[in-house]
Length: 396
Image 1 (spheres, rainbow, N blue to C red):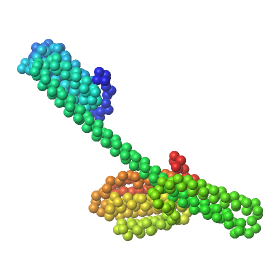
Image 2 (image 1 turned 90 degrees about the vertical axis):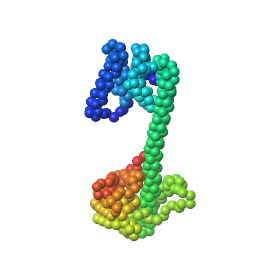
Image 3 (image 1 turned 135 degrees about the horizontal axis):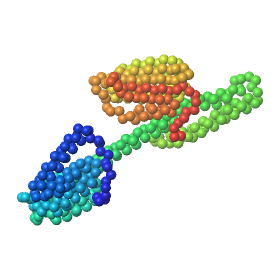
Image 4 (image 1 turned 60 degrees about the vertical axis):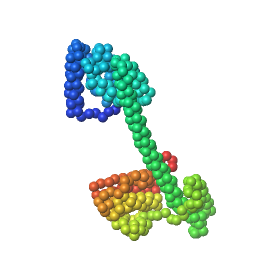
């Protein structure tokens, strides 16, 4: 409601120099307006009181637009009652008061809704027709009406722009969320393939152990049979769960049956990139065979995505890949690239690929960082070498 007191808006604090300049300007305007009213025949107290009503809205505009308009409105009424008419003017207000009142009225309309603006228009129209001599009152009201229409259009345009920015932000958030969900689904499928491979080996070895080993007791045979049965039951449950994920695949797409890539396949990935004209160097230290399959797969996918981003966002720039295996501790990898060959950065990174890489590292209990520097862009990851079960967030 326009009769209420508005809460202070979160305006950016002004530097002290501007506060000082504004204070001096307001004091100067106060003295000028008070002098003009004093020359019009008012006593000194009334002149300074009216001048304060004229100047005060300027100090309230940034943080309290409603109060600024209310003060200016009261100033119009008090000025109309106190002054019959200024010399050579059909209204009792000085030009400075009219400009301040129109400014406060317009800013009020921009910051508030249309209903409140229409109420302000009605009240301002009453004041105009009450204190402005006819036929000038019609012209003054048309001016106020023009300010009203302009103010309403500015407010509507601002609301539309803010709505567009909010919608774009929601769209980006939804894209990022979908990218994470899609990457989690892909990770789940790949982890299934890795775990299913080892579970199948357990089942086969448990079933064939009584035939490969001599003198196996009957109790041990039953134990092997139980291990094989439990392994196959686990495989069946995993395939049933994975079927729910695969049912959302594109129609006609068959599940991938090729072995999942490992660290040894990085050389093939690098060679393909070199064939495409990318300058890539690969350094692999440590024993890849000591790295669990799930960690190898995650490291391969991170390097693959980072290399793809480098070729897309920094075309022609050399890329360095370093993989360091610390036995029984962790795997560290680095993928960095210089600036593009023309010295300018490539297209802006959307961050969705980075979100997927970070998701992969987090699901293994590792960490991943990515960022740009003076010399280019770098992706660093640390993956622990552990056989503990994976803790997947949100139950995915």
